Length: 199
Length: 199
DNA sequence: CCATAAATGTAGTGTTCGCTACAGATGTGG
DNA sequence: CCACATCTGTAGCGAACACTACATTTATGG
Image (cartoon, rainbow over all chains, first blue to last red; front, side, top):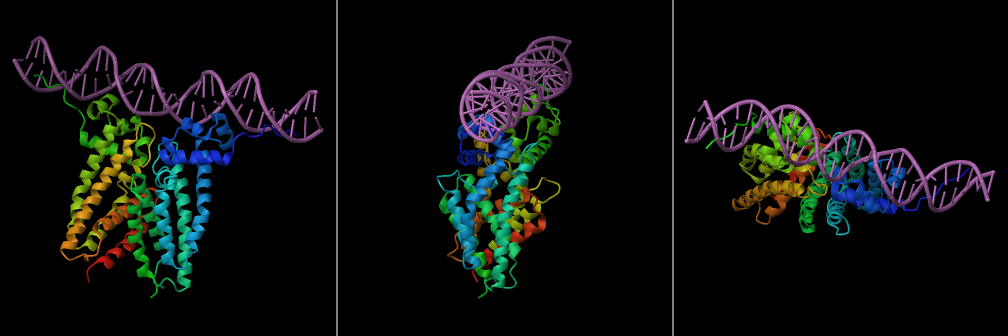
């Protein structure tokens, strides 16, 4: 059977542009007009490819997390829990103040509270934040097994703590905190892991 | 001269209702229709009293911080820096999961990234978060003078750290984290201050 | 008791929102 | 080369948005 006219735009390149608009303005603050202009396409192409505005957000979130996956592997491969925390928070400080991206974290400022009809946008972001927290928890469980973290350490609590600190850094970065300020927070936060290490 | 017809609604009670709508839906997610219904007034009364939507937000933020002032005094009056941190974070965990309020913190989920035309809403929230951080920093400077924190401690960094953790807890709470989870984070976070205390 | 001043309720305003109908263009399968 | 399936651009849909004109009501000052 016939296959139809092929798409003229690069979906991944368009998603990168959409991601940046959502990142800078949040889900509700981003308009279809801004998104289509940034993506270089017209509304019908957007809706044909992604369904609707929320579908576009999900696709952009997928791409956001996919791009971070390699970095996250790097983080988790650090030899000790303390080094995992340091890589995680220092990397977060740097990426959230990277001039090539909007400041902060898309998974935080994308939309913590939304209006009627967009209720699952916050859930969508939260679910993806939770994935990182899960990875950290599993890594800290392993650190206990390896005798790196002391037996009394609470892997889940430490993962939650790291997740909270990086989210908090995202809040600060979104309102203009510079890299030095975020690194200060990262340095202070890491100290917790020195106390939790087996001596 | 004549004084005009007096206002029929209680501005503070109306602000409490508006605050909750902004808290739950964010600045952009909250509609004038929702706000006026919650406040029990009609649009002209809202605009006569507060100017516009952003003016209403500012008034609601003023009331939000005013309500927290007494609690903040309580926090700052703790005898040591460690106790300040503990009261601050435990209180934050409790208030952000208080069933009488929407979950999380208005100063975080009110609007980290907004659309064109509302650019100063994030600044407005950030400025008020910074006030708390300033209070904490001054308190930690005092703690150093009192010999409670060791001389090498960085008061500004510790204040920023606490500010980041509480913002991060707000992010978690906004997506449904329960009180126990937040208290776990608070407990872990406080450990930093034990290391920073003069022995 | 009258003139003035301000708040109220009704009923809208113009604009922008997310989204789509439709016609034409561009490819594939037979 | 034709039938078909899908994408593209133009143009615009109904709905919801923040906000307001206006007549009315309710107070105060003289």
